[in-house]
Image (cartoon, rainbow over all chains, first blue to last red; front, side):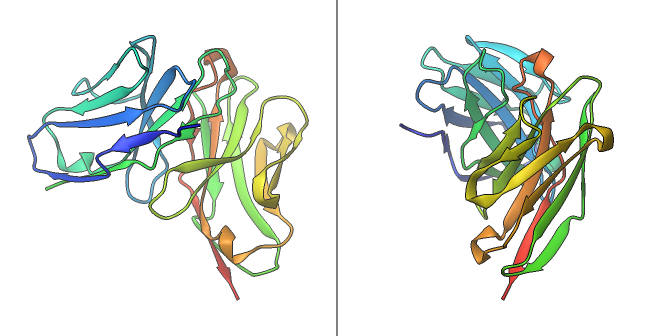
Length: 114
Length: 115
């Protein structure tokens, strides 16, 4: 069984740039969620994708956007990067309808904004 | 709105001692509750979950947690700490009526295990 994989693992950007982070969900999972984990904090829910549509969003501005593809993989895009966007971005997959909150997390993409 | 509060950002125990990590939740509906563990430079791994069945939940690596509605608590325990337990632990809550898959995490507790 293939786990959740994320790329890139580390990247550095400057303010105002755009970034795309990628996630492959675990085999058999059809839902992908993205979380932002700032240093010393717990993960915060950004949004969730199911059937290629956004299916729930946390308190993040529209410059955070995403996609889900037919193979259930997903992208997180962040435009107009700000210094506070520096964080570990975690992708998690699950089965929609399972409804028990059991998420399987990748190892994350660590973004540094200078 | 749901929230969790983890008391103590850092906990230090001796190897072989009891581990107790505290979590209190706030929820307007009967919640689902979780404990996740994060090792350095890794993602989160589910330790255990409460989804309205037995109030005492057993998880992996010898951890367990008890759901106490009257105290709105879901504290994590392990009878005997091992060096390999050193990690950061996150308590999380979700709303089952909203599908249960959107988690609200606490700020985490860093567990240190000393010889």
